[in-house]
Image 1 (cartoon, rainbow, N blue to C red):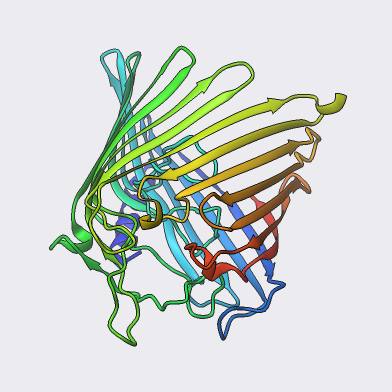
Image 2 (cartoon, rainbow, N blue to C red):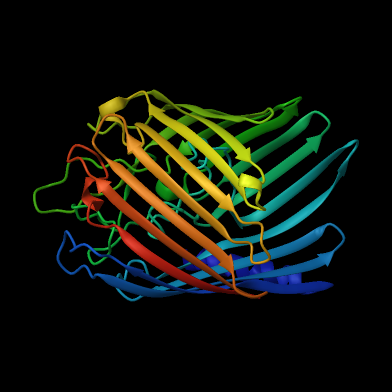
Amino acid sequence: MRPGGAMAAVLLLAAAGAEAQTIDLSGEISLQARWYPESPAFADQRSGTGGLVVEPTLYAEAGPGTSFTLTPFYRFDSADPERTHGDLREAYLLTFGEWGEDSWELRLGLDSVFWGVAELNNLVDIVNQPDLIEHPRDRPKLGQPMAHLTVSGGWGIAEAFVLPYHRKRAFPGGKGRHRSRFRIDDDASYESGAEERHVDFAFRYGNAVGLLDFGLSAFAGTSREPSFPAPTAGKPLVPHYEQIRQYGIDAQLTTDPWLYKLEAIHRSGGRNLRGREEDYGAFIFGMERPFEALLGSRADLTFLAEWHHDRRGGRATSALANDVFVMGVLAFNDVQGTELAAGLLGDLRHDTRVLNMELKRRLSNSWSMRLEGIANLSADPKDLTYDGRRDSFLGVEFSFSF
């Protein structure tokens, strides 16, 4: 985040805290480590990394209907200098009230918004830039400057966004795992003459009708996903951000015992993998079913399956162009909140298979533990994920919440 964003956050904090009636500090500090059992694909990469994550949240209530939230983020990584970074995940002033029979809410500052119903990826989720250097699967988001107005009533929920600044995507450095074989420049080019200061707009309407929950969304502005024009020999790739329009729908149908999920988009203005502009559609279809009191025990098992499809096929810029993901989550329902999850991702066009497992458990009221593993079972040279074929890892995380 540029100094101007930090200064704006300080001014908002001062404005909210000047007459604050309630101030609350919470957050999390995590110690993390990873071990990569396979030899690295590139020089200067290490087999083990360690790190520290600090993410506190300060909440100040200035009066009825007005509050301020500040969530800075900092990570230290022992191996990749690019992964050592800070960000403002949240720094916004919130005010709300009534408008006739409806309610309204306005957020000004940096915030994070989530759209979607799928588990592995969310096509419709386009407001924030994902923080790719954090995790190859779980992708937290960079704080996005915005004015976010929400109006809700018996007719549904309408949200409008004005997004005055674009956050560039960050990529692992030369010493980092999960990197591309190509060097990627820290700079970027833009289709808009306003570059990162182009004002983007987004809108979403959501409602529930009987068993169906759905959302309709639209976005016009700078793409969060860069394309990479052919580089000059010996030069790094320079990310390029086009002006796009995206229309999306996300829906969930709740029946007994199945849940059916759908995300679909149509996007125009972006470039495909061959560098040509191409309008396209993509969708995710998923099914989920819980099995309660498994085998007469206290444990519950949730099974889900998803199909990810991009109409561009081999021209798609996404690795999830025609893939199936299946996952099971076993909740032990014990005092420690123990959960075990295992998922398998398979590409229907390439011989690429990835297995991921995760175990979460509370150790005390403040401490929790997370063990995870990602294993690249097979990798196809034609697949976009081939560069990460040697980046299977085992990870451990201990978190302290306050």
